[in-house]
Length: 158
Image (tube, rainbow, N blue to C red; front, side, top):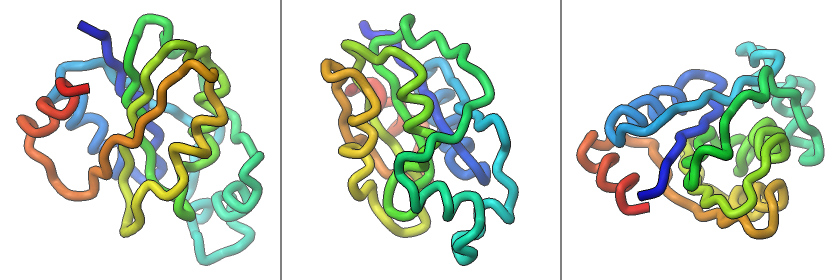
């Protein structure tokens, strides 16, 4: 049986709530990807082209620093990676996380939250940040409430 980790980034708390529900339902470990500088509501104002998130997402090569590098990725076979969808893709801080650790031979299953869009090119963009032999799959959008039993079954099927 593979050992699973739920790693997630959440700026407003929505993805954090989903990740915690998923970890509890499936009985797996949880790790929060924290930016070195937390995002404020002003940073997340997508209407302001000079807001921090707008600037970062307009330059897909931008890599915001993360607060720590203590995730024990080596101990897991499968990583469920959660994030909000920003500008149609994963936030660049998720790329920072992926580029910080060695995901060689790991299976990475994506899950995301969004106000209305799907994964878009997230899997393709994120795959560029991991070893060639890492497997990355688009998992589920978790925008609506999902029962603990359904979450447990989904994680168990991976």
